[in-house]
Length: 403
Image (cartoon, rainbow, N blue to C red):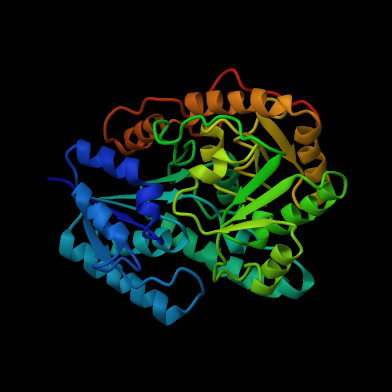
C-alpha cells in the first residue's frame, strides 16, 4: 500500500482544512500518515484523525521564531520519521512544514515531494515601518533563502492564488524549472456549510481570524468606530485568538476595544457557523492571504463579503456582485463599504446569493481536491481550476464596478 505523509503546523488544520483531502487519499487506497506538533495521545484532533484510519505522529516543531537549534532538531526529527515509515509521497503546508518537511524528504530520498503554499506569513506581510524594517528584512532574507533551498527539491509547488506564485517566481524563490500550479484554496464542504437564513435585527458585521495586525483587525475596529457614530445600533463581532506571532494584537488593546463597546468579542470558536449565521456581512480587511478560508465559509453560508483588494482576498469577491473590495489599510473606505449594507439592506440578500453561487462553481472541496490529486498524478485532474500560469478558467464571474 502506498504511503502518503502530510506535515502540518497546527493539528486542528488537519481536520478543518485538509480533512476532505485526507479522506480522498484514503478512498484511493493510500495509507495516510499525518505529522504535527502538539498532537499527543490525549489530543482530540489525534482521536479524530485516528478514527479515519490515519496514522498520527507528533513532532517537535516551533511554529514561530527562528531558533536554529530547534529548527535543525525539527529537520532531523522529520528525516528520522520518514526513514522509519518510508512514505512514497510527502506534502507539507505552512512555512516550516514546507521548508523542513521538503528538505527532510529530499535527504530521506522520498520519491515524490509536494508543497502547498497557503500564505506568505509575517515575513512577507508585516508593516515595513522604520522600527520594524531591519528585523523584517532580516527575517525575509532568511525565509526566502530557506524556501529557495527547499523548493528546489520539490516535484510540484501548489499556490492558492496567482499573486503568490508570481511573487515567488519574480523573487527567484521558486525556479521556473520547478512545476507550479494554482488551486482554488482549500475548498469548502458545501454539505457542511449550508445557506443560513438572513439574520434578524440591526446590521451585524463579523471578522474571524487570528488577532494579527496584518489581518486588518485594527482597520476593522477603526471602521466600526466610524460607522457607529451615525449608526449606533450596528454591531461588529470579532472572533479569534491572540497568537504568539510578532504581529499579534496586544491583550490590553483588545481589552480596550471590548471595554468601550466597539466590538463584540466572541473569543476562539470551535464551530464558526453560528457566528456566520448571526451576521449580515462578513469582513476581512487582510493585507495578504493564500485564499482566506473564513471568507469562503461565509460565502458558502450565503453572506455578502467585504475584503481587501490584496493577493488571495481579491480572488473571492467580484466587485459589486457578491461584495466589495477595499484598499489595504484604509479604514475609511472600509467604513464606506459597511455603510452600503446598512443603507441598502437589499444588498445583503442579493450579494449573499451570489456568494453561494460562486462557491458552488469555484470552491467546492471535491473539485479542488480532484485538481490537487490530479496534478499529483493521483486520479484525474478534473474540476474547476486555474491553469499553471494562474489564469482563471472559471467563466461567468469577471469584471468590476466601483463602490
